[in-house]
Amino acid sequence: MEPMAGEWTSAAHSMGTTIMAVEYNGGVILGADSRTTTGVYVANRASDKITQLTDNVYLCRSGSAADTQVVSDYVRYFLNQHTIQLGREATVKTAATLVKELAYQNKSFLQAGMIVAGWDKYDGGSVYAVPLGGTLLRLPFATGGSGSSYLYGFLDQAWRPQMSKDEAERFVVKSIALAIARDGASGGVVRTVTVNEHGVERNFFAGDKLPLFHEEIPPGRNSLLA
Amino acid sequence: MAWAKENGGNNKAAELNYVDRSLDGPSHNFSLMPTPSKHTQYPYVTGSSVLGIKYKDGILLASDTAGCYGSTVRYKSVERLKRIGDNTILGASGEISDFQAITNLLDELITEDWMWDDGNKLGPFEIHNYLNRVMYNRRNKFDPLWNSLVLGGIKKGKKYLGMVSMIGVHFQDNHVATGFGNHLARPIFRDEWKEDMTLEEGVKLLEKCLLVLFYRDRSAINKFQMANVTEGGITITEPFALKVNWELEAFRNPTKGAEGSW
Image (cartoon, rainbow over all chains, first blue to last red; front, side):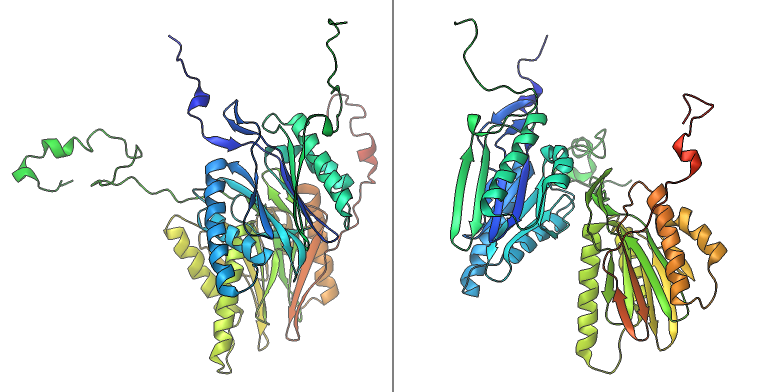
C-alpha cells in the first residue's frame, strides 16, 4: 500500500539556490534566486534569500534554510548590540567575522553557505564569502549555492573589476538567470539588493524581465487558439 | 557492566531503557551508556601541497594558491603561507578554515610573547612544540584541525624546518612536503638537495617540484607563492606562474600506432 505522503513532506527545507555578491565602483550588489525546496517540492517560489543584518550590511543565504535563518538572527542581534555600544554603524568586516565565527565553531552542525556584503566608510563596498566549514575570504565577487556550479565558466570569462552600478546589476541578474536555467534547485525571480554610501535599493526581476537563453522561448499565444 | 542499583536491586524496568537499543540510536536526556560523540569532521575548502627546504641562509617554503571545494577549484587566490613573528613562516595544506584558526592562535601567542617585553622572543622550535601540542590534543578529542603544517625559521643562526600533521605526528628535516608533495617532490629533494645551497639553487629546486605538482596533482593550479626566512627577515612573494611545457613530440599524437589507447 503506497504511503499517502511523499518523502518531501518531511524533508528539511533547503535552499537549492543561486546566490552571489559583486563589488562595484562605489558599493556592492547582492543577488539571489527565490526557490526553496523540500526534496523535490518547491515549498516557496518567492523566498527572499537576501537578509538584512544592519542598515549597511546584508547576507545571502544558501544551504539549510533553518540553519541560515538562525545564524542571521544571532548575527543581527549581536550587531544591534555592538552598534549601540560602539556608537557608530558596524563595519562589513565585523559582520562577516561574526558570521564566520558562528559557522566555524558550529561546523559539525551547520550546513550553511553564506555571503556577507555591504558598504562602510572605511573599506567602501566589500564582499566576504563564508563557505561550508567557516573559512572567511574577502573577494571582489562571490557565488554560492547549488546553482553556482553552472557559473564558474561564465564568471571566469565575463567578470571584470571596477564595473559601474548598472553594469554590475545587469551582470548579477544575467548570472542568476543562467544558473536558474540549468539548476533545478534554483528558480523563481531574481532579487537584487544594492548597498552603497547613499543607502539600500531593492530590485525584483521576474518573468519577461529575465533574459532568455538557449532553447528557451518567450511566452506567447497558444497556436491552437488562432 | 554493573548497572546502578535502583528499586532495591530489581533492575528489569530500568534496564529496558538501554538493553537492545543501538549505541547510536536517538539520543535521550539521560542515559547510563551515552551515545558516542561524533566530532570527526570533513574538510570542505582545502589547500594542496606545501614544500619546504633548508638552504645556506635560511628556509624556503612554497605552495600554490588554490582553495579547492572537492574537485572544484573554487578559490584561486588563497594565501597558504603566513609569517609568524619575525623569524618563522608557516605553510598549511588541508582545511582552510582550520588554518585561519591556527593563524589566529599563533597571532595571539606572538602578541602575548611580545607583551612580556622581556628581551626574549619565541623562536621556530618553540612554535613547533606549541603547534604539536595543539594538533595532538585536538586529535585526542577526535576533533582534529584538518591540516598538515610546515614550519620554517631561523633564530640566532640555528636553522629549523619541520612538519606537524593533523594527528600530531611531528618531525624535522632538511626538506619536507605535505600531501602529494610527499610523493612527487620529496624524491626529487632526496636526489638533488644538498647542504648550503644558494638562494637561486633553492628557488630553482622548489620551482622544479612545483611544476611537477601542477602537472600531476589535480588540486594544483599554476599560481604559486614562495616564502623566504633568513636572519635578515621574512619575505613572501607576490603570486607567480611557471612556464609549462607541452612540446613533447609524443604528446602531439599519443595514440599513433595504437588507436583506441591513450
